[in-house]
Every structure is written in structure tokens, then in C-alpha cells.
Image 1 (tube, chains in turn yellow, orange):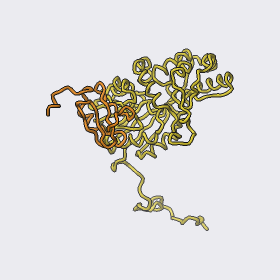
Image 2 (tube, helix red, strand yellow):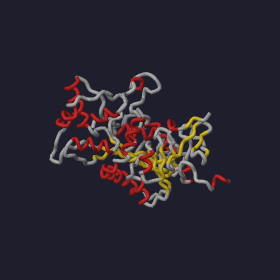
Image 3 (cartoon, each protein chain N blue to C red):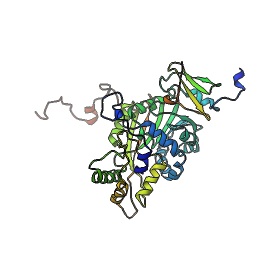
Image 4 (cartoon, each protein chain N blue to C red):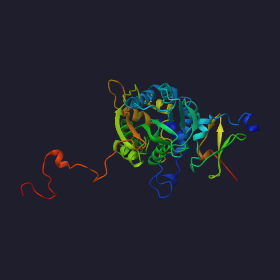
Length: 316
Length: 66
């Protein structure tokens, strides 16, 4: 994968390297490249449908936990497995947005080409937004979450899954080890993934109510590393990190990394740890903490004890 | 309204979708130009193309208005 993908990739623009000063200092991913990858993957994504379907089912299971009925849904980057499931659940209006028009066209809902960092929807357009394994190529995740929250009507639900820390970790380590041996240095070949705690904090920061984040290990195994590389390509998930090495990698890199990947009885497990995010657009009907000082009964009375001031010692 | 009977350039877009689309840059309203098959944001000075019935709401794909 890495060999052919680097060859196809345009050389990274040095001015956009993360860590450098300037307006692009926070850019981690090459969004144009992400879009090209998704454009191309529209023709091949069918091959990885079983994995994407498994991920979508795990996420949409969350809908069974609520008695709410939804009428207007947005499928963000669902790649053909989310919108049909929403329609099957009886949601009459489903829009499918994708960075790549060709991917939006086959996603199953009313297609729109849109950038998650520049959502083109009026405030309160949807009562459900689902992003299944799609927000991990976004540079400005806090900004995207804020726009998602605004596109939701009050009390609207947001469901998202994205690969978390630990995903593709064996591959990351094998590539780093092989590249160090061959070149005496490493370049980023696997995306950085967020931690569970980051994800929960981001939801809160974006103004969502009742945010919940948990992680699920999705069991995926390959007979060989080549199978994994082929699937990543078919899904449009190959390296789009701006700081990636634009040079053609040494011939031996992939075979060396593949040989270093740990093999279990089930084959090679690349590690797919999905962060599952659930959050609501705020609404007055939702439970929330009471204001300090708004209590009408004393805690001491409820406990049948004597209230003591801070600093006062019992018996003292 | 003569434009209503002619076939829209760029393909038909579901009216329910047109109702909720705004300019991704300004979040302001869009004007549907059927003749050209574009969604025009006067405030941003950009016209977003409609291709095969798909509104392409990407600023880098939009035509700059003079």
C-alpha cells in the first residue's frame, strides 16, 4: 500500500508542515488528497462493505436505546452503508454528504458534496446526524463538531464513530521499525488517532448535552498484510498526512514491515478500536445539574445528621 | 415563470434539500440559478455548481462572481 500510495501522492508542501508558523499550522491532513482518495474509492468501496457495515451496525445500535422517532437525518461520509440503514428504520428524509461527489452519489441518501469543516446546512436542519467512521480525516474536529451541533435541531441526536488510539498500532510500529532500519529515520505513515478522553472533551466543548463516549474493539483479521493494504486502499483510507514523506519508499519497506507484523491463530489483526460518540443538541427538557444554591432542602436533614461548617472538627 | 418548465442545468435537486442548503462559507442564503445549474451565494461572491443533480458545496469548486 504505502509504496503505490506514496507514488500516487503529490509531494507534501513544506509550507503546510504541521508545527510551522502560519495559518496552516494546525493542518495535519491533506484534505485535497483525502478527497481524491475518496473519489477513487467510490468504485472500490463495495469490497470493504462488510467491515463498514459491521461498524455502522454497532453505531446504529445506539438508536435502539432511545424511543425517539427521527424524521430528518444527515449521513456524513457513510460510504453507502449508513443511509440505507436509516431509511430502513423508517426515517423519511435522509441526506448523504461526502467530501467526494462520487462517494456522495452512491451513499444512498439525497447526495451533497460537502466538507465537514464547512457544512452547508442551515441551523436546525436535522434531528439526527450520523458520522460512521468518517471524521478521522478532519483537521478541525472541534470546528466540525460545532457545525454539526448547529445543524441539529434542539434535542437532535449526534452519533459518530471514529478510529481511536490503538487502531493500526501493530502496523504503525512495524512500519516505524522497518523504516528506521532502512533509512535511519521514520515518517508518519499511519494517521494520529484521538484518545477516548479527547473525544468526550471535544463533544462537551462543542456545546453538546449528555455526551457519552465509549470504545469498542472491532474484530478484524487478515491472512496477510497485503490484504489489509488492499482494503485500506479500497476504502480510500491510505496515508494523507501532510508531513508524509513524498519520496518513493525503499522497496524493502513493505515486505519488512509485513514480516514484522504479529501473526495470531486468526491471522494478522490490524487493531480496529472504534470510539463511539453519542451526544444531543441541548434542549430545556433534558436533565441537567441544578444551579448551586438552588436546593430547597438541607442535605443534613435528608441524612438525619448535624451540619457542621467546613473546618469544624467532629467533637471538637 | 418560463424557467419552471425547462430542464434544469446540472440535473434536478430535491426541493427539500434546496430548502436547507446554505453557503458553507458565510452560512448565508443561496439563490438557485436553474439556467446555469448553480447555487449562488451573493455574500461570499461564489457560485456552487450542481453536477448530475449533486450540489457541490465545496468552496474550492465554486465559481467566483465578478
